[in-house]
Length: 135
Image (tube, rainbow, N blue to C red; front, side):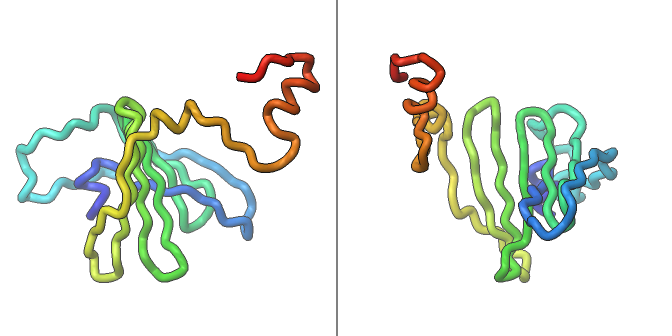
């Protein structure tokens, strides 16, 4: 399963049809396939799984944060964020188990962007607070 290869299988709960309950749980024992026995892995730490809403989970281990859910077509969407490398990757897992990398990129430049398309805009808020110098 994908969680073994990455050391983490996680998901985010965005559905609005259920109550907003969040709880952490001890991670289940993750068995490594025999074909990977003895292969060192780069994920240090104990995985933490959090289920925010049914059907979507989020979890973390070391510098990896992952989100998982099944979309309307039945494809499992797994997003992994490496906080140390400021990189993210998105995978699709089909019903037959085929794993496909659909996106992988650095996200460090994203944090230098200011993106807000609705009023009040960030500069408007700064002016309201008496801070006239735009960023």
